Amino acid sequence: PIEREDTKMVTVETYIKHRNCFIKIEPDTDIEFITDVCYLEGAIVIKYYTQEIMGLKQYDLINHLWSYFIDAIDELIEGKRETSFWFPDQPLNVILRNEKNNRNGLLIIIGKKTYMVEKKEFFLEILSAADVFWELLAQCDVSVLERKNKIQEIRKKL
Image (cartoon, rainbow, N blue to C red; front, top):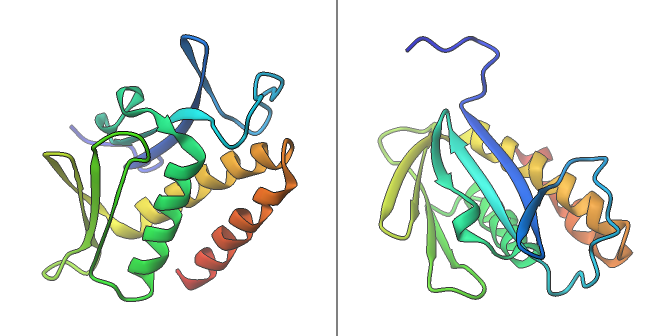
């Protein structure tokens, strides 16, 4: 299928688990339901066109998961070929690898599934979604602003 030019290849959204449902995080999301910023469950939903790379089933401690992604992207931008991390509370490994044969390619391995995405777009979408998440969390706890600052520093490197 032919995609329209304004269609993003990669989309990233954050959801916070509240009781038995997930609330999508957007810049104007009401934060009344956030009671503990240190133990906050949620999910990062990553899609490549319509293919889901990560979804609501992979929910975990969302602030830790976002920190791991940000740190991993920073390592890759700084020249590391491959980096990996585990989900905070489940045995799910994430591997991000710069491709040797394709400078613009990023291999993502989550559990037993493998995906190839365009690196810069993936990084920019991850950083934008992380920025929205940390901005929201900063309303509850200003100590998270250091994570927002790190996002800005990483963007300058791209």
